[in-house]
Image (cartoon, rainbow, N blue to C red):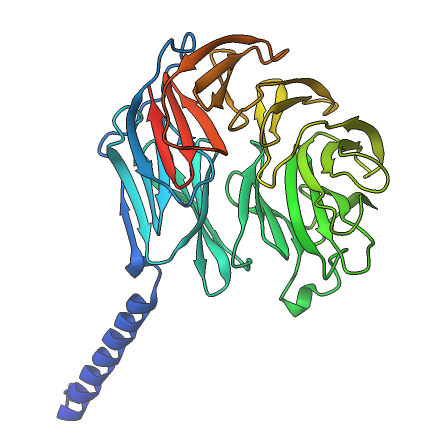
Length: 402
C-alpha cells in the first residue's frame, strides 16, 4: 500500500507564492481596467415617457438649467433629459432637472447624442474618441458598448436609423446595437490597406439619409470639395461602396453639406466666379439636379434640423425650409431667428431674440409669439421638446422652459 502524499514546507511556499502572483496580477488588471474608472448609478424609478403637448404654450419661463458642454443640442431619451459634462452623462427629470441616473468615466467625453430612445456617449482614450457607450434613457442602464479606432475629435449625428461618428480623417456608421455598418477614411490596420476608395482625404461634413450617407471631402488632388455618396450598410463594413462621387465648388470656397434624404443631398455653395451663393441638390450618384439661389448671409455656424415634413436650415439669421423628398426650398421666414427650431403639437417653435416664434411648418406662416427674456444670447440655439417642456441648448448649457 502506497503511503499518502504529504505536503512539505516547499510545497506550501510555492503555493503561497503562486497565490501572491495571481493576486498581484488581478490587482494590476483591475487598476488598469476601464471598470475601475467607471461609475454607473441607475434610476431608482425609471423616467416615464412624456405625453405630447396638446398645443404650444401661451407663456414660458425657465424652470431649471444645467451644464452640458458635451452636447450640441438638447438630448431627450426615454422621457429623461440627458446632459453631458466632463466625463459624466446625467439623466434628469424633465420638470425639475433633478438627477435620475448618472454614468461617469475617468476619461473626457467627445460628444453625446440621443438615438433610438437612448443616449450614445463617445469617450476619448489613447486611440481617439473610441470608447462608446449606449445608455437607456429612462434608467441609465448600460446597453451596447463598442471600441474602435477614431480621431481625437468627432462629430456625432443621427438620422434615426444610423449614428454617424465623423472625425477629420475617419468616419463610422453604427446601427442601434452599435455594430459598425461602415468604415470610411483612414485605416490603421495593415490588413485593411487598399480597401478605401478615397485615401488621404479630409472629411469636412457628413449626413446619413436612410440607406445612404453623403460625405463632403477635401482631397489633395481635387480642385475643389468632393461629394461622395456611399452605401450606409455595404456587404463588408470595411469596404465602402460608392454610388457616385463628384467635385463641387472651388477649393477653399467653404462649401458645406446641409442635409441628406433618400437619394438627395443638399450642399451650400458660397458665391464664386460661376455665380452667387446657392443650394445645390445632387442625386444618388453625386450629379447635380437642381440649384436654388440664397439671398441672405450665411454664417459659419449655420445648421439644419429635420422638423416634420421639412428640413429647417438656419442660415445664421433666418430659416429656409427644404422638402424632405427633393430638398427643394419651400419657404423662407423668421428673420432674426437664433436656430432651426423644433416641432411641438404640429407647430414649429423657432427661438428668437425676444422669445419663441410659432410657425406653420408647411408654409412658414407666423401663428403667434411666445414672449420671454433670455440672457444675452446671439445663437445658435438648438431646441427640443419633451412633453410640455421646451429645451434650449445655449452654448454649454441646457435650459428648460415651461
